[in-house]
Length: 504
Image (spheres, rainbow, N blue to C red):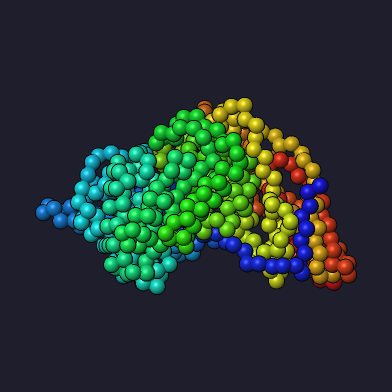
């Protein structure tokens, strides 16, 4: 019998809030759109992420720099200011990814994605340094040193993959050295890191990056890298065949391995940031829409606690155009919300996790959290069961996939104040805040293949996937301060309970 034992008079500890440190978005240009900003506001209402990371801040659609007739570099901060202003107004700071190469500084014509981010090193490193310095000086003038000291600057994205950087490892180190020098010259306390690599199974430059910085006295303030829980191949348009990795703890293994590499290095105290992670690295994989991704998120984050300082889920919205605009309301996009702002199961998992109070209580259960504040007791638990796939993700997760019933979870509490409690029950799982299965069941995918459902149909999905509890019950607690709740469970359910004391 699975039992959560929660003693309100037991040992308490501060909640490790590494999970709400950062979240991802596609690219800077997408954050100029009203719909993206509306969804960011929706996200921040409950999650209160502290940082947002995205590609393409320096790409040409942001119009940051150009050459005049005499070959002089001219700067334009209008779009960057719009993006950063809107972020800060919503209580979220930039984790600034310095990429991709502006056309006027490029050394070649190689690009990636539908929106053509240039992935070549700079033709002139001095001009690159001048751009980075100008960015740092501008944000300092606009927002102040005290504010920008709280930001992070990450150099490039996945430079170990040829699709993202045409240079060598040595070229990346040269790019990093020039970048960190330019930023630190503006203010030495500004935080810079990298290498923002991916493909950890093949090695991702972590030991080499630290050794380079230590041996050459190059500043580095954090290590960043990426991990995904899918196997397969991928082109820049998200095409090919994928499966979930055999071991459900695959991302956790990467996180712990990187932490070990840092601890064994010359700079063992470096923070470890996973600036992208998810269970699949393609934006056309309906596993992202499936209810099974909600417990996967919680299962993974719980096992990364103490090893990662930041886990930035990729991404918060399906307004994301690496492979081009999403062709359907549910097309396998990375987001916690779809293009129309309908909340996926992963949205609720993150919101419930981020809404946990700052004081954590032990539960004696691996797949759960309990936390308390002055007004309520919060309990969050889940089952993650990796599906036994008989097909690749692109064929498997386009089906209606009913969940099997499993044993109840018994939540036993002690140390409660005598009296009556209201218990709010929330659930994500099959047909519970499960927009994608409801979408499939309604036959909305059959409307000429890629048609968008009507406004009324989308509103019906919103109503069925809002944040309301599925049930409320009264709980009477006697003088002994004890209570037990038996909660029905199915595979891949996520359950949240909130107990509020009403009085004696």
